[in-house]
Image (cartoon, rainbow, N blue to C red):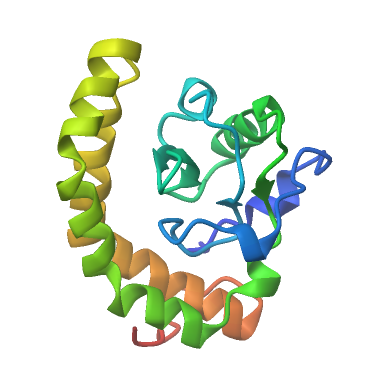
Length: 174
């Protein structure tokens, strides 16, 4: 049994992933996928509602939950392909360092505050677009509070060892 699913092993086509790491939105959860300078048409949640939210100054798309199955990876790839700016990236494994992951985790309060401070935006977007964004934002905040730490520890192991931890492997601390 492995604990880390490497979505890049099932990503057949990377043509839609032309996003630049330097343009990555700070709200993206550490992992191989991220949203950078994406469009503001709010199409990402249509393809990958369990993985994409909107945020930042222009309410562009970002990855709030990394895929854990081939089907989830395919949905995220569809969201990237639907982005006319091709602003999604899939080179996060080559960019995230253990120190950067730990820094993101230390600063998670900033993400939680952002989600809370923009509650009205999510409620309005649901009234207009009906994408379930407000519920997804609440789910993201709950994931940060309970669940993300364990996933990030597994991801840290992946970054440090370039293999999935097994059930008996000791996971790094955040």
